[in-house]
Amino acid sequence: MKQYENFAYIYDELMDDVDYENWVYHIERLISRSGKKVKNILELACGTGNITIPLAKKGYDIVGVDISEDMLSVAYDKSKREGINLVLLEQDMTELEFDLYDLDCVVCSCDGFNYITSSEDLKSVFKKVNELLKSGGIFVFDISSHYKISEILGNNFMGESRDNLAYMWENYYDEENHLIDMELDFFVKIDNQEDEEIFQRYRETHQQRAYGNEEIIALLKEANFDEINIFGDFSTDDPKFDSERIFFTAIKK
Ligand SMILES: C[S@@+](CC[C@H](N)C(=O)[O-])C[C@H]1O[C@@H](n2cnc3c(N)ncnc32)[C@H](O)[C@@H]1O
Image 1 (cartoon, rainbow, N blue to C red):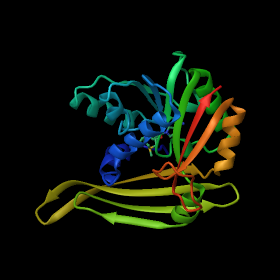
Image 2 (image 1 turned 90 degrees about the vertical axis):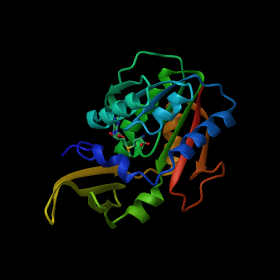
Image 3 (image 1 turned 180 degrees about the horizontal axis):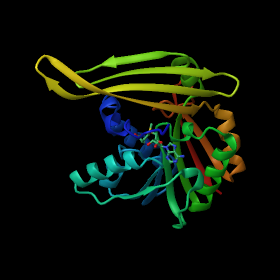
């Protein structure tokens, strides 16, 4: 079953409580903290463009990559509505073919790397990012923490009912392999008939991997990165044991 197919069209509605303005602010804060000057950015797993579009509006020269045609289609429509010309590429980042080198910055936000479920594949993505960056270029990304995936999402069941949309989200966590299977059932209103509301049901299964911070740091070092820093949640402090989002910055040697 594909990920981010029909789900792409309700993604932004379900993310309406996420403060993307602050997310973009935080990415810029981490870049400026590193002392690096950034003009061009490659964004991996850009999804519906919630980070891409604000960065483009701020004047960065940005290219977005995502594996989901549907997420990119939503990003494209949004960018057109905002009068922005985005370059969007439909690609699996584990097989990234991109031949613009000497990049200033590569970004990946909101779980993109949790979707890479083998550490070997993640290392090869990091190596490719390293190859694409200029010497001294900055890599900024964030992941859902091991704590969040294992303890908060874990074997949990969540659901919500809204006027036009309802979902059930059931998780199964495999502790041995640090993998979470997330079964999403969602219901989208397609019609109102007299006193009946008609909903269409869709299902998707998403799989993510929980990575420990030390494991990510080791993979970054193996991929030839230096000056690796990690931050908890949206702060510039070290992560705490219960931080749910971990930000990393790393510099190409
Ligand atoms: C939670 S969404 C985040 C989207 C966006 N970065 C945001 O902040 O809203 C995760 C994204 O990762 C993408 N993704 C998952 N695996 C991928 C892969 N192997 N290559 C490229 N994109 C991938 C999905 O299609 C989805 O758009």
